[in-house]
Every structure is written in C-alpha cells, then in structure tokens.
Image (cartoon, rainbow over all chains, first blue to last red; front, top):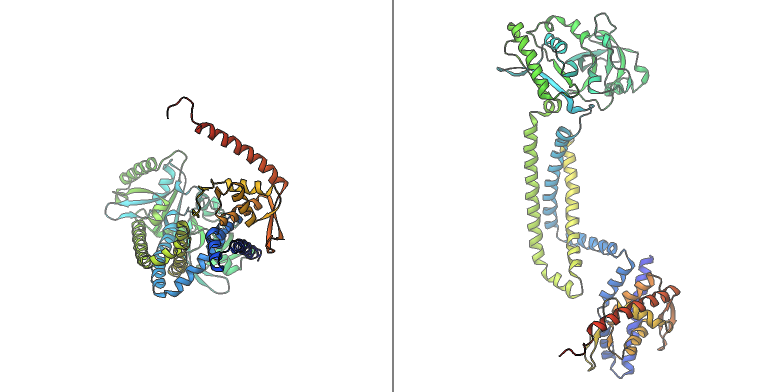
Length: 410
Length: 119
C-alpha cells in the first residue's frame, strides 16, 4: 500500500545516504570493510531512525499495535497450556460475573416499567402470627374509603382461566383488577382502551384486556381482535384492549378482567372479612405524602377495623412497602451474596492469571534485554506486553460472555 | 557520537537541527548526506549531527511543507533524494532565525563576564 511504498522509499534513502558516506570513506583510503563500519557508526541505529521517522508520519502507533497484536497471538498459540489456563480462568470469572450481574441488574437496578415507580406501594395485611397476609376484600373497600395518603388504590387477584372460543382451548393466567389498576401504574394499552370504572359494576358487559403475547399468539397481532369476544371459563368477554409488550406481571399474566366482575361470579368466599383469597393491594402515594405518613395512617385505619370487627380483624395490621421491595424483597440478600461470591471468583482468577504472567515474564527477561539492546524504548516494551495481556483478556472476555449467555438462557 | 578528533565537539540542542537544515537548503537543493556534511563543514566540524537523526527531522519538515523532495543524482553519481526549500519554509527560516538571534544574544548577555567583578 501507500505506507509500504513510503517505508521502502525511506529505507532506500537511508541506504543511499550510507552509500554516500561509504564512498567518502573509501576516497579517504579506508578499506571496504572499515568504510562500511565507520559509515554505520556515524549514521546511528538504523532501526531506531526508521521508527522515529515513521512516527513523524503519524499512525505509527497503529502499525505498532497491529504488529504487537500479531506477535502476541503467535506467542499465545505457541504456549497453548498457558493460554488455555489463563483464558479459562478469566472466562469463568467474567462469565459468572456477567450472568449474576444481569440478574442483579434486572431485579435490583433496572427501572420498573411503571410511571414514577418509587411512589407505587404494595399494601398487605399483617398478623403477628403469620406475617404478611393477603388483604380481605371488605378491608380493601374500607381502606379505599377511609385513607387519604394515596392518590389511587387498586386491588388485584390472580386467577386462572380456561380460555376458549378460539381454535383450541388453553389455560391462561390472569389478574382480576380494579378498573383503575393500569392507570395507577401509568400503563397505557398498546391498542384499544383501558377499563372504564363502570365496567366493574354488576350488569356491565364483561370485558377483557389481553397481554401482548397472547394477542400475538392467538390473534396474530391483528388490531381487529379488539371488539371480538373470547370465552373465559365458558363466559364471553369482549376484548377492549391489548397490554403493551413491556407489561410484566408475575406468573405470565395473559388476561386482565375487572375485579368486580370476577368477585360477583365468585362472591361467596370473598365478601367475608375473615376469608382471604390471594388479593394484593397497590396504591400510589399522594403528592407530598411519605411512605411513613401513609403507613401510620393505614395503621390507624387497621386499628379502627380491629375494634369494629374483632372476630376477623383482631391484631391485623397493615404493611406498606415499595413495589420493588415486594418484588425482590426476599431474594435481595441472596442476590447480593451471589454477586459478592462471583466477584471474589473473578479476583481469584485475576490473581491466578497475574501469577502465570509473572512467571512467564521472568522467563522472558532475555528476550526483553535483547529488545532493549536493539533500541526498543521502555514504553515500547511495555506496550508490547500490554498488548499480549489485552489479547489474553479479550479472549477471556469473549468466552466469558458465551458462558454467561449459556448460564442465563433459561 | 564519535569523539575521536581533537577538536571539541558539541551536540546539537534539541530542535536546532530543523533550523540548520532550513538554513543549509537556503543555498540550494541538497541530498541528505550533503546536508549533514554542510552543517559540519560550516560549523568548522564543531557541530556533530548523528546522521540518522536527520531523517526524522527531514520528514517533519516535509510534513509541514517547509521543504519538498525530488529524485536526483549525487556528486558520486548515485541516485539521491534532493530536498528543496519552499516559500513557506523560507518564511519559517526568517522567523526562526530572528528568534534564534534574540535567544542567543540574550544568553550571551547573561553569560558575559561582568567587568570589575573579581574572578
């Protein structure tokens, strides 16, 4: 290429120069050998001159880097034992960290797909004997009516349905939710509309919101699905909307229906204060209200309910927790512990590789002495060794990513 | 650097080689070897140029377009590259020379023995 041409040109110039000097020396009566020797001494280190001239052109670092890269790969190829051990150590360390960190990220760090998620609280009832328990439906109504700390409050109840009316029936998980549930979280349907408040009332047309994946699976993503009916447990529900793809509720929720519609059909047990289903309550803190303030207000309400309904509500308290805590509450310490463990593994791997490199470096003292004698600067030798480490760690990183991918792919 | 002659020899100050090359080329185009010889000759062999160090300097000047290079034939009838001062290089030389004069004059004044001061 152009650069090679330039290099050849420079080498030719230097040869021409040396020849001039040799001619002069010969004219001064030196022998051929002496003339050449004197010329070389006078010129100085040819390699170094070439190198520093190349630096003037710019991009010399790229050439050097590519050269180092090539050399490093050759060297690693020639010592397969060392290479395999070092790369595998790094790969295991990096792979473990990447896999665990992906879990930690999605569980603890990634923002939840809700508007202003830190203001969204999960409310549970609490008894000293059991700890957190589900909320009794009548209690939810009292909370809703009496509390002022929340700008919105919604109850939800996981339900499984037999979905039919399409080509083949299947069992789907769903949530029966207060109609304001999606609005509370700040989720807008991808197509169609959200529930209307009145659709919970007895006698209203039964409506359903589908998950994005169910909509794709059963309707091929056809927007005309809205307005059609599906059968849930043998009862027709009109599709009014489809959830956005990022909506994720625990347990692969595929259908949402208004809570009132479901309780009306399954009322017997749920309307007793002493009967608890699997009901969860979410609330969005009103502006300017802290979680502590909300908790104390809710505890006041719970105390009143306890005196009013001692048979069912004696010693029943309320717990208000941020939604993220309830989603990952119990696994958080375990996750952090695992993260700590894999970080240690990585550190050990690094120490291991560092030791290997150190031993190998000690064995290469001669090579380095030779390089310096030939005119390599200190930084040049360091750059070359760093390039070798770079190749090694890149390989480790690549394989590590592969391991992480294999570990987390389930 | 060779020190085999009796005459005291001085190594070049950092950065002065560029100036000396430009000055040498003011007399007309020359090839690398001739430039070194001219510098040594004009300084009465006081200034010693490590001949190799000429090349990074030449390429630096080429890059700044202060000189150009053409193919030619040397006195010994060899292929050689002749370097020629450009207009831009000539202007640069004037600037650098006056800067150098100022500097050298100032240093000389500082170093001049003060009359009346006992040695």
